Amino acid sequence: MIAFYSNWTKPFYNKNNESTPYKVPDYELLCSIVSSLKWRENNGNTLMICDKIAGDYYRSLGIDKVWNDIDDNLKVPKNINSKVYWAAGKLYAMNKVNTPFIMMDTDFIVWHNIYNKVSGKDLVAAHTERFKSYDGIDKYLNFKNNKILNNNQDVKPFNTALLYIDNNNFKDYYLEQAFNMMKDLEIINYHKYKQMITIEQKLLAILAKEQNLKTDTFLSENIIYKKKKPRSFHTRNFSHIWHAKRIYKKDDERRKKYCQKIANIIINDYPNYVKTLSKIEDLKPYFN
Image 1: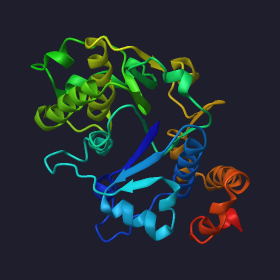
Image 2 (image 1 turned 90 degrees about the vertical axis):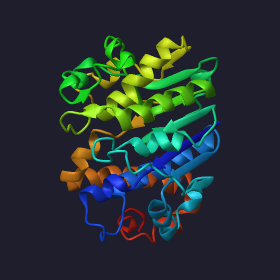
Image 3 (image 1 turned 120 degrees about the horizontal axis):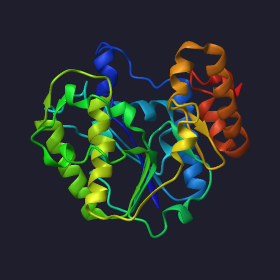
Image 4 (image 1 turned 45 degrees about the vertical axis):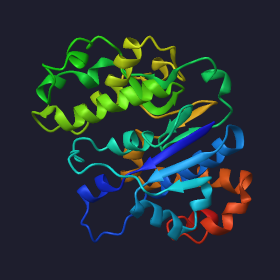
């Protein structure tokens, strides 16, 4: 089973000058490398779908062989607001892949084979989300004339950091609705995530219910919200450093500790990559 990742660099350049060389932080770069290698070891092939800037960046580091293939022709229409819909790239990447597939974020790792978790299912999401993140969404996104969103606010959203779909008709239907909503729904006020997660996560769950899909989740919501707030996690089968990335940006000691931990996995499990990675300036400290 193929797992695809995506990298759309437009959100990076919304925060940085166009002359700024593109780069991925050491902790996420190492995580993405191990994510692909572990998937290839235990589950199947991997594909990185990205724009040309990201593709050139990976090749310049010499890590393009981490994935079975790189498709660096990811296009997102210019009429998609990249500041609001910063994860639109992963949806347009999904549009390039036929089911069955796994869509995985670059900060997520699957450590073991997960065939038994997806067998017989149409859709399996990372986990469900609690409603708090969606409170007051009508102050930011005008969907009062959209029956799909307006009539289904009681449906629990699906987190898509890890997402399995084995229904091509549903995938096409979901993307058609998502693309139309990102283009057509009025943005009332900017919010750093509410509009994006409504289209990416809430809509997915609503349509899956509408279409009577056989759905499941890889993880219990209780693991994610153990301390009432969403957090990063590490279980036997899955790791997600989503929340931890905020910490690593500010805490050098914890960042370096995490990077060394992931580098050690590469050294022990994938020694053929050590020579290449030890030449990358930001990763040198962890391999020398």
